[in-house]
Length: 225
Image (cartoon, rainbow, N blue to C red; front, side, top):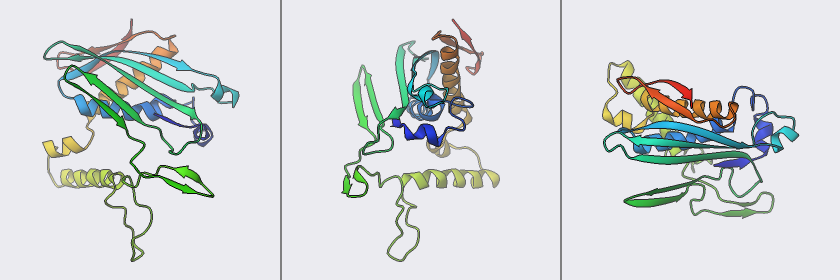
């Protein structure tokens, strides 16, 4: 997943100080991966590599591109899998704001996803060529002049969160339907742990970081090799 280098100026206030490109963009990859495979698996190790130079030349002490490599364990079979998450914010301006590509290969099939291109393209004199994503949000008002973006998935994700919060306040429980739609603390713990392990690996020169679990399968700490 990559975004144009103008993002370095947009986020100059915190880039390399309180966050980095991995926390900002790799978080999306990891979150999607965890949602896809959980439960029944868990991450075991993480190590990171980074390219540097462009951001530093602009006076921002942060990495240009960060790649995390994580090993995962299938708890039932003991099989191991490998995930590679790469994010960058030094890409040139292109037809989309975020290039997003996913590739999965397993022993029973494979998946290719170009999440950035939805089959829509527009060329305008003042903007150039773009590939918009109308499924995320409809920003233009309806014919009557009112908001019409409520069917886009960007809006519906917020709606699902609010509906779940209202239901919980009324005494409801986090049933399967809610858990299938929204991130819970269980999945978020893994995402955060992988990001933290990646940062630790970079800070320690690319060392392998190990995930350690307690008897209930909850991450208790992360230690270098």
